[in-house]
Image 1 (cartoon, rainbow, N blue to C red):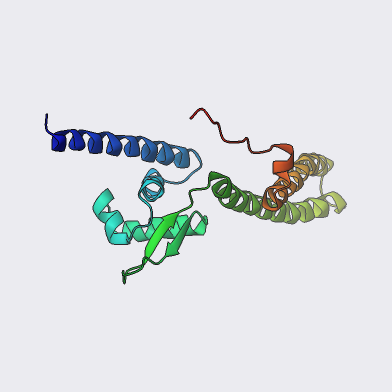
Image 2: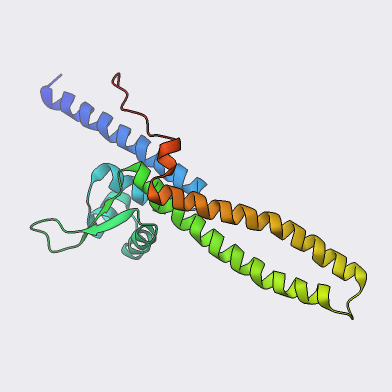
Length: 188
C-alpha cells in the first residue's frame, strides 16, 4: 500500500471519529429540546473550529437560511459566538468547547426562564384564587378547590425558589465547591 493510501485511511478514520462526536452532541441536544439539525450544527462547529455560514452549509448540506436560524438559536443559548478570522471578510462562528461553561450558559438560561414564567403565572393565578376564596358568593366547593390549588402551588413555589438558588449557585461557581470538577485523568 502506498503512503498516500494509508493517509486516506487515516483521514477516513479521523472523519468517522468526528462524525461519532457530532452525532452524540446532536443527540444530547435533542434530549434537551434543541432540534437535531441545530445540535448537528453545534457539533460540527465543536469539532471543526470556527466556520463561516458558507463553510457550514458546504459541510452539512443545509440551506443558508436554516444555517442562519440555527446559528442564531445557538447564539441565544450563548453556546456559539461570532468571531472574525484574520484575512476573511465573512463572519465566522465558534462553538463553546468548555462543557462547564456550556452547561452554565445553556441550562441556567432555560431554568431562569422557567422560574420567571411559572412564578409569574402562579402569582396571577394566586390572586384569582384569593378572590374566589374571599368571595361571599362563591360556593364552598369552589372555595375548597381554590384552597387545594393554592396548597399545590405552595409546593411549586418552593421548587421554583430552589431552582432560582441553584441557578445562582451555578452562575457564581458556588455549586462547584460542593460538586468539584475532577482533576484530569492521567491515564487517557
